[in-house]
Length: 311
Image 1 (tube, rainbow, N blue to C red):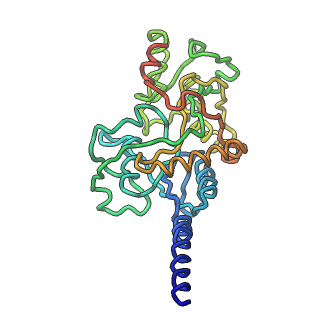
Image 2: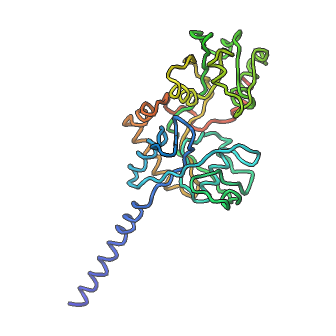
Image 3: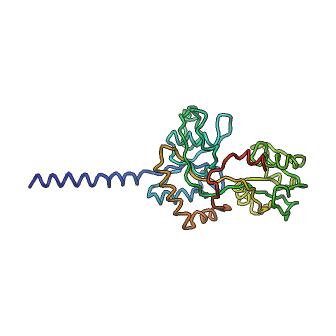
């Protein structure tokens, strides 16, 4: 009799073990890295609640996976040793998070990095040693996209009401653009340089692109749609207006993780599909003040620069 009880006890323990492991996994936080200063996608301000489209989406994905959410905030930096691809890879490879949100899904951003190591971007909780050390990089793997991120033409007060259906409709306007940006490449190469003489270049990070357009110093610019949304939210009385035109070459955004974490990417894809089917992702966009556009084909954008030059 005692032997039978012993056998049943062992069996009960073995059957319970997977349940215990499952419960432990459910308690493991879903760590997602988000840029702290990319309104209206993600915003982290001291003394204020975290906000933005990607914050709302991250909360919903974690809820679907039945895991608590832990956001690792980071701050992008621009130098010769860094890029959005390397920053994301370093954060993931260092275990700071399992996913990076709001990642532009292009072939260039998903290739195996040419560098073996990279520095971490500044992140919440970083120490002096963290800012100095280099991280061995892994291979990135994308989730399915959850939003389409195009560029749009924004019009200054003197060009209000101008009909824009193509880049060629900008002819005759005083154009302004940040040097070295994607918008710069588009405008400078359009129709073999037809717009060059009407373009004024500003230095990113030093000159105020939208401020110059607001003052009426220029008539139009080509800018990321989310950045324009952020300006309108911060300046409800802005004199800058939307043209309604979207440049036809744009990138989807989604999550990116490490290729070695394929099970998580698969689970996240299922969550994103369910949320999209319920209309919740579009609703998150409205709540965040974002002009939400659903993902478009191709899911991963190919050679952007060749496409632009050939137009």
